[in-house]
Image (cartoon, rainbow, N blue to C red; front, side, top):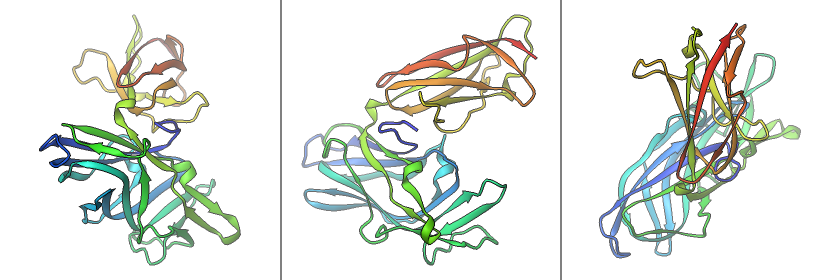
Amino acid sequence: MKRLIAAAAAALVAFGSACDSGTSGTTSLSILLKDAPDNIKSAVVTIDEVNLVGSDGVVVLTGDPTTVDLLTLATDALDLVTDVSIPSGSYQQLRFVISGGYIEVDNGDGTSTFYASEGYDELPDGVTATGELQMPSFAQSGLKVNMAEGSLELSGDQEILLVDFDVRQSFGHDAAGDRWVMHPVITGGELGATGGVHVTIRNGTGVTFALGTATLSLTDMNGTPIGTPLTPTDGDGDGVFEVDFGLLAPGSYRVLVNPPQGVTLTVNPAVPFLVTVTSGQAAEVGLTVTAAS
């Protein structure tokens, strides 16, 4: 999936208002964590600590352990760090100290296999891991996220950083050892370089299709899904249903309409519909169902 760097998962790091705009002041820091799914059914990690590394050393942002299934964060963000006051200045790395985790892998026949790091005790009730998930040194040195521009300068009123985590590339199967290895493909860049897509869908004249029974989805130009399909909603009851796809890298995407099984829709303009996302903007897409059978 393409976000900033052809990624399938994302952590949103929001830097709040600075107490002092000079480098000798402090900056209020918040971190939201966001993700998106792959064929892996669950990807659970326990984050013990989040640090920011700068020229003056390491700043501990949080030491409260948080266990999260990354794949539940496709559309919602997790408040990982909120309003922590840190010294303004230059920072080169963000580090996640991860004490353990597990993944649930779809076997393709309706069953799953669980792979867990050594001694990890956060598996679902009644589940025993039959394979190993290796997480090299993440509990000691931490998972290191290098800044895309080499460093992050915290000195203004607000800065927002997007950290992309590619699920497809970050968990690899070692068939010889019957284990999976976590080798994260992850980097950081400015959130200001992202955009979104706002989609509306309505029924045309004489069409009575229940729009809330369909989902809308987004893919990149290779057909790779971006996040999960979303169900459109009509918040004000005017017959126009809406969804929002956010945190997208500039580029081209396709919007699809997915009706319930057994239903065929004719949509104007035709779908998949090509849409272009630009930095800091929400592209608008308006769809009309002209026939349903």
